[in-house]
Structure formats: structure tokens, C-alpha cells
Length: 193
Image 1 (cartoon, rainbow, N blue to C red):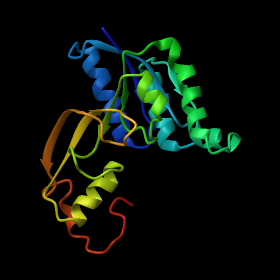
Image 2 (cartoon, helix red, strand yellow; image 1 turned 180 degrees about the vertical axis):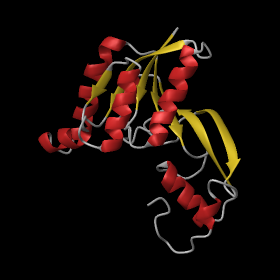
Image 3 (spheres, rainbow, N blue to C red; image 1 turned 135 degrees about the vertical axis):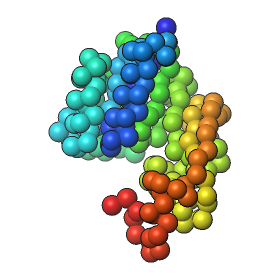
């Protein structure tokens, strides 16, 4: 059985839906794995959406490990705070010995040492060679560029952001719902707020 570590910032409903879909598939026997821990770079009380994500994690009785990157950066204000942060993350997850870490809505760039110490997959909201950023930023860029398709990919995490070897990807139209309404916006405003 595959031992999975789940990484998420827990920033929106999509983060909850991803965890729920995977956990329900595990319960149904469709995925022969277990999520041995969930790691978040936010802490309870830091963000309402994060707290909703944490409640979902607790409802599945999954161990939750939180380390606020914002609080950590405040205390460790040197230039190498990210290296120190990743070191602290690795010390906290070490006892779980994950076979695979899945980054699903994890909004921090993983450092080189973590890339070399763990097998990591990232869910990225664009097809290979597509835009970088959050799913909202990716869709906005695609609409601005008049693209008619978007996609998603799972790729191995490497020190180069969103450029690791692709494991799987899919394409879908952004000409229809739920994206159709965004095409009607002609100014440069943020589509999702």
C-alpha cells in the first residue's frame, strides 16, 4: 500500500474537493494507498478557508501538520529562511516515511533539498508548457491570450518550478461553462474577485 503525504495550503473549496475525492476513492478501494499525514503551510486561525480545510482533514482522522510560512519567515528573517523552513518541514514529516508526497494546492515552491529527499508529485492547473501560477492566474492568462483550451498535469517535482517530468495530463475547453462568463469581461480586472 502506498503511503502518501498530502501537501496543501487549503486556500479554497477546490483544495477541499481534491482531498475529499482522493480520500473517498481510497475508502472505496479505487486507490490502494493511505494518506498518512496532511501538511499545510498555514495554521489554524490564520485563514478561514484554511480552517475549513483543517476541519475536513480532522473529519477523516488524518494527522495534520501545520507550519505557517508567514510566521516562520517573521521569526527567521534571514535570506535563507526558505531553506530553514523546508528543513523544519522535513523534520516534522520524517516519522511518517511517505512513499510519495502529493502537492495539491500547495502554494509554496518546494526547495531543492526536499525535491531530492522525497518523491513528490505536483498537481499543476495547466498542460505541459502552459502558464505557471494558481488556477485562477492560469485561466486568466489563457483567456487574455485567446486560448480555447486549458488543462491540468501531474508532474514530478524538481528544483525547476513546474518543469519536472510529466506523469499525466488532460486538456479541456474553456469556451463553455464554467468559464464562458469570463470571456465577456474585456477589461484587465481580476476575473475571480
